[in-house]
Length: 228
Image 1 (cartoon, rainbow, N blue to C red):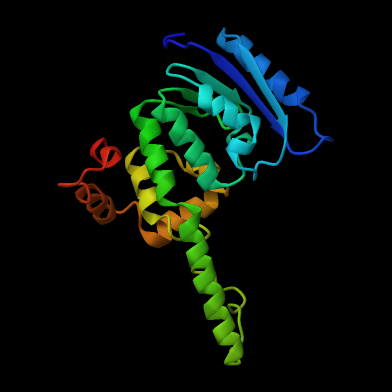
Image 2 (cartoon, rainbow, N blue to C red):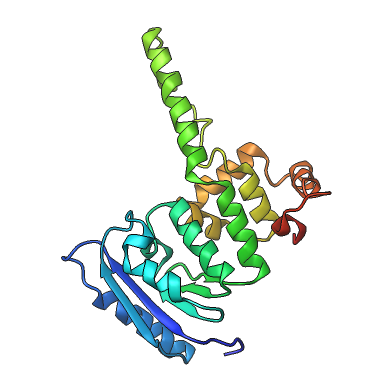
């Protein structure tokens, strides 16, 4: 391999006793065999991904991981079940100079420019903003119901809303960084058609929008934007 790696950790998490860790271990061992590397230490746990890392074996791993260490797992969802939690974990790992590789997602996240851009873009779409949007939407719907307004759109008319609403800047940054539509879809847990439709409806790939996003960094202090 062309990069230096110190310790290699294999992280396995299942949600219930009915699930087996063997499938994930086989995936990781097979992957390592193809890469010519070997896991030095295994971390296995049976616990929900919604539980905070410091209450899991993962928390112990995060406390001892060091620069040039590598954590391998089957997919990002093994780290956590929410976008905010996963990004917090990845940011901590990258701050320590360690790396995370996933097999199914095919991510290679570490102390490099592309990883920092993706982490920054992801952070802009944190769940707190989506929750605020969701709450405002619910309040508006309840108000319309109380006014006797029939909800729902006429048949055949496409919705103007997207599950990616609020992620305009993040998606724009990823477009500038050359992130593929498929990768964006994986990051947001949605279909590539949803991402393409969102970009088209919001005109995020237009020259005007991309120039505006670049100009946001003029005079700013944001490292990821300066690296675009």
